[in-house]
Structures are given as C-alpha cells and as structure tokens.
Image 1 (cartoon, rainbow, N blue to C red):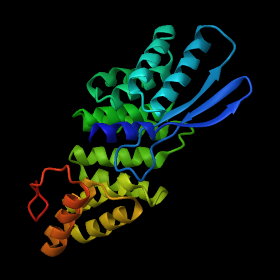
Image 2 (spheres, rainbow, N blue to C red; image 1 turned 120 degrees about the vertical axis):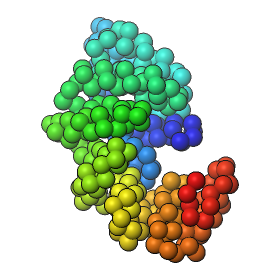
Image 3 (cartoon, one colour; image 1 turned 60 degrees about the vertical axis):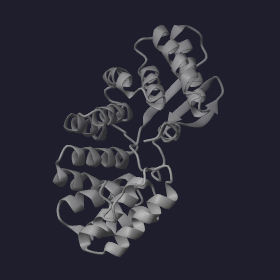
Length: 272
C-alpha cells in the first residue's frame, strides 16, 4: 500500500460523533467499506474535564485523534505518546500510538502498542481486532485468527462484519481457504457491500477451484466501490482461469490506465 493510501486508511478509521457539556464523547469507527484494506477500529472513550492525570491523558487522546484526522501523523504520535507517559494503562492512548505509527509506515514498531491496548481492554472488540490486523500484516496470519475470534465474542462489538472480513482475509493468507470462505460469507451476509469481504471471497473461491463463483464476487466487489489495483488484478486472473483472455486483457488495461504509477509489467493473464 502506498504511504498516502496507508494514511488515508488510518484517517477514515476515526470519526468525531458528538460533544457533550462537560464531557466529550469520541467514537473511532472502522474505515468505510469502499476501501479495499483492513478494517481498523477503536472503541468509544470519554474525554474528561475534571482535572488530574487521568483526565489529562484522556484529553491528549482527543488532541492526538484530531491531529491524525488532519493528516499530521507525526504530531498525533507525539501527543499520543505523551498520553501514554501520563497514564501507561490508557488503552486508547496505546491504540492511537499504534495507529499513528501505522500511518507513518512504521508498522514494525506499532505492534507492541496494539497488543498492549488489547491487553488493557480485553473486552473491547475494536482493540482486539486491531491487534489481529497487526499480526496478520506482519507475517503471523494464523495467529491473528484467535484475536478476531475474541473481537467477535466481545460484548457489544458493533461492527462484526469488519472483524469477519479481516478474519477471512487473514485465513486466506494463512492458507485456510475453507475457513476464509465461511468467515467472508458471514461478513457479506451482514453487509452485502463490504468491499474487503467481497474481494477476499472472490480470491477464496478461485483458490478452491470455483472460478465462476469467484467471477460473481469480484463483479460485486467492483460494483460496490471504486476499483483498486488488487481487485482489478484478481478479476484479470479469474477471467484468465475461465479462458476469457479478452476480458482478462481488459482488466489489465484498466490497471495500466487507472494506476499509471504501477510498473507496466503485467502479462495478459494478470500474473505478475
């Protein structure tokens, strides 16, 4: 993922919902399903105004969140780190440190904070989900699946389709296409236009030798949200598997036209 796309993905995971007298409520939401990447989430936090170290840490989390939303990941990181120094047991402060490091392309360093956030708030499905994403993105896809299971089991977890889509995608990376297919189908049942689930389900079906089913899901993915390079490449591979070389070539041409910074090295079958 390009740095600017990575930052956009992190930024879309944050949304300010309401401001209340004497107490601001901030909710971190999963990214819009139109993006073809993992769904990062974080829980609600209360921003206190009653003074003291705990309240100061809460307020710094608010500031860090706003800075991340504005695109200043460096400032967000510095502010979230200050919150952690004030209150080392503030789960959302650790989560924001992790998200800021992710946005800066420093994912190798963010894992400790995502894990600490999950440990400090073991009933917060959002933070369990985020640590699962980190594991999956750092070569530990099989290990990540248990964390998505924990997220799904967390009381009141509001976005199960996100964790299911993440779990299915990571099961696919772990080589378990059957588990991936089951999780992804559940995600699509909950949210039919979940772009990540649709793309990964198309890949799972292709791996299981069901190319016609794969075609149906990739077409749904391309109808649900703006195309990304990965989805177009997968569509080309599916058509190539089905023997429609003309359709495969059209998808490759779309990649070249819509993503001109991509090295122009894909053969007609879409394998690169």
